[in-house]
Image 1 (cartoon, rainbow over the protein chains, first blue to last red):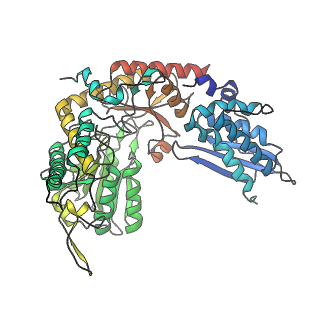
Image 2 (cartoon, helix red, strand yellow):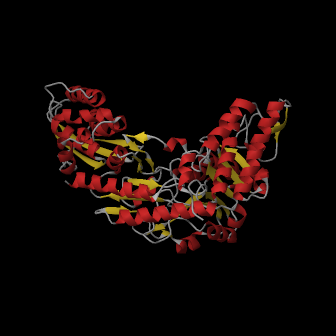
Image 3 (tube, chains in turn blue, red):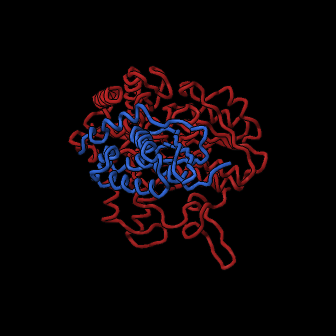
Amino acid sequence: MSDLSDLYQSVILDHNKRPRNRGKPPTANRVATGDNPSCGDNCTVYLHLDPSGRIDTIGFEGSGCAISQASTSLMTTLVKGKTLVEAEALFNDFKSIVTTGQAPEEISDLAAFAGVHAFPARIKCATLGWHATLEALKQPPSA
Amino acid sequence: MSLSPDLRLDFPALDQLVGGKPLVYLDNGATTHKPRSVITAMSRFYERDNSNVHRGLHALSMRATDGFEGARARAARFINAAHAAEIVFTRGTTESVNLVAHSWGNANLRAGDVILTTEMEHHSNLVPWQELARRTGATLRYVPVIGSDGEHGLDLDALERLLTPQVKLFAFTHLSNTLGVLNDAAALCAKARAVGALTLIDAAQSIGHEPIDVQALGCDFLAFSGHKMAGPTGIGVLYGKRALLDAMPPYQTGGGMVVSVTYEGATWKPSPERFEAGTPNIADAIGLSAAFDYLDALGRPAISAHDHALAQHACTALSELPGIRVLGPKSGQPRGGLVSFAFAEAHAHDVVTFADQDGIALRGGHHCNQPLMRKFGLPSTTRASFYVYNTEAEIELLVKSMRRILKFFAG
């Protein structure tokens, strides 16, 4: 049985207590919501892209457990400046971390989620905000 | 008369370690464990009597039929139905409610009619009525739940206003799976009857915990599942008054429910066979019958008193924790055998993961009650639900585990 301190690392507790980029940015013109019907958690991500298709503004709202809140908060800090393709590549790295527990050396903060792999029921908590962000990136901008 | 602590030994699944700690199973609102007598009755059927019912004339088929019809008669005795024919076997509460919504509802409801239910219903006693209203043009109305945490239960003044002659059916839960509110089902049925409305009681949470007598309650339909009352999954009951069932069209059609079939059409058997198309769930019906025996041997007033006392203890002890919201009746007020709560500092999923590390099984989420949770502004709660084998010592372990969680997230 895995220890809970492996799951609830200090990075995660910090992002849960003081989420970054929380709220709806006024300039955002793309939005998507992810739902976890089994627990009622939800996450709405708001985006704005610069002319080259890179995220220049991101914010999120919603409610969820410490894992989903911290994962979404950390994600918002990492995808800023990234294109859809780059964000998808980062998400693939993250998925690999939370499903295998192995993190490549060059990845720092995301490695805090390696402990999730020992709690398979919580993987969908960790990926909720990521799915919403990738979905929002694929949305057409609103007027 | 109180329950013996030795009865834990009747439940093989309780005897195990989780994360190196003895299992404390407090997720009985989702499903209860099964005593050895239930498990044995089912394996005995498969090992000795396994056969199809009704259509066979050989020895095993006759034994299977006796077991299955014996289970029906046993179910009738358990809820004091007037006839065994008033017991329809279904897959569970959800299918029982859907059977009424499709069969009785499609045939009897028109635009202008009202279906009345309450704000505290499980999705299984809510979505079928929404869909029935959509199909027929009838209107669905809800009796409000009052109190910021639902502590005052149903708004009985609003009920008086809502019970108009247009109401054709009042469907309500006996025991709320989220609030722990135990409704006065007999009084609610009497009020509905006074305006000519039929009544359906969702007894999923109460059947294994409270004495139930359908004739004393005065309900027209009552739905329950076997697996929340020490019986197997995949079997449940729809009780319906005989005259109502016999006037209702089939829900599903096929073998076992017909009198005569030609290439042009078919005629139906009376209830309950009319509603049991196909080979029924024979083994689980026999297991359910053993569960009725088990609970009656313990004594249902003793079960009710035991579960209420545990819930009361848990409610009082948990209410002292910082930043907690306990849903439903306050400490000291009557409450059924469960407690749902939410912490300001810790989300239900994190709470359930932590408790699991202490060997404690809880449920976290919306408890299939999304509209009510939205009304309270809560995305999710943690629920501890109790049964015959739970102990006061386990409540102490629950509270200790919750204190540890709060310390972790506050720190």
